[in-house]
Image (cartoon, rainbow, N blue to C red):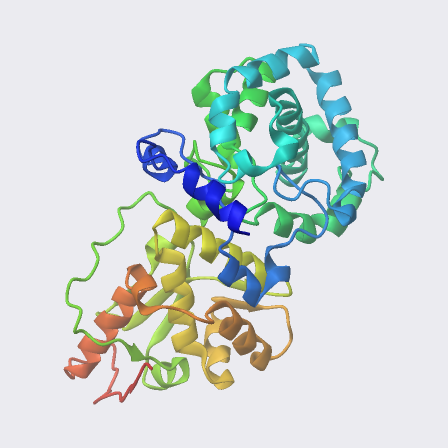
Amino acid sequence: MEKTLGDMISKLNLDSVDPYLNIEHQEHKQTISEIPIDIKAKNPHAYQPKMVSVGPNHFGKPHLMPMQVDKQRSVIHFLKRSSGPIESYLNKLKEVVTLLRESYEQLDHMKNWQDDDIFIQLMLIDGVFLFEFLSVIRGNQNNYDYATNDPVFGYEGHMLIYDTVMQDLLMMENQLPYLVLSILLSVSEGLPEQSVNGILSWMMFAPKKGPGLHLLDMYMKGLLDESQPAKEKEKDEDKTLVRLSASKLHKYGIQFKRVQSFNGIKFEKNTATLTLPSILINQHTVPRFLNLKAYELRSGTKELNSYIDILDCLIQPANNVSPLCSQGIIVNSLGSDEAVVEVTKEITKDKVRRDVDFMSCEVLKEMSDYYGKGAVGNAEGLVMNYLIFDKLI
């Protein structure tokens, strides 16, 4: 122990530059980060892929190895369709190997990935698999060269594993740089950059939002619909949020309306309507949203965490779920309203107020202020004198 500590002291170099300061000025930052240990410890299974690894972080785990056979098959199909040999892809990826390596936060500490050639082979195999799997999801005609009963890339087999594989592909540590797929598609089809970005953004659930950093980033962009600028952060720190019960709001005439994106979240005073995007509640909701939350907080945005927070405010206790289900804002695949509340509690556990002071909480403040002042709209025959809200803990 003493020798180890002595070695650490002797190797200190005061002239060295903190690597995290360096990456702040790089165009391609370390975009694929590890989940902080304290967060992962609370629900470790939520951050562990169950069927497929993508990239170096989970590669080689025994329960994920069966899918390696299917990855190999996907590369064979991809190359048979391609106009160029496998070397054309490897060489192109090798040209940007430094950028690809820098995408991973802890890669320098992983002994198995110090060899650039091995690392590039991983990027190629996982990139092709990701491209092929997403092509099945989006109905790409190229995938008709697989057998109809293919367990991964055939329609029926794909439908059976879709939820589990997509859950894995949207985990924060289980990502592949967008640049890999961009190169694969560019070399394969000979398309210009703009066309490549258009195809990939559509495949990655974020139409017209590319290029991005990786699949999780693109999925988040599509989910939040970043076409509109986010609101400026509220500077009045003394302003208090309130708990807004969905059943009370519904009782006093508040209408709920489903919208397509997070940009549509608003409270319309003239019609007393709260608009929110929908959320599917099923067995995959907790791990997916925990990974999305972790990524969003790491990237410095807060829209998703705020949306989850407003749901938490609206649906406790369980009798508040029904008004939101009736409008399609909550799509409940778990059967009971109580199960929805439990899922929401799980994904809002350990929330910090400073992480939810953006888009959705602005709506809560507007509603609280509007009704707190007794300025109740009655143009449509609504007669509401007041609402009493319990303060958030």
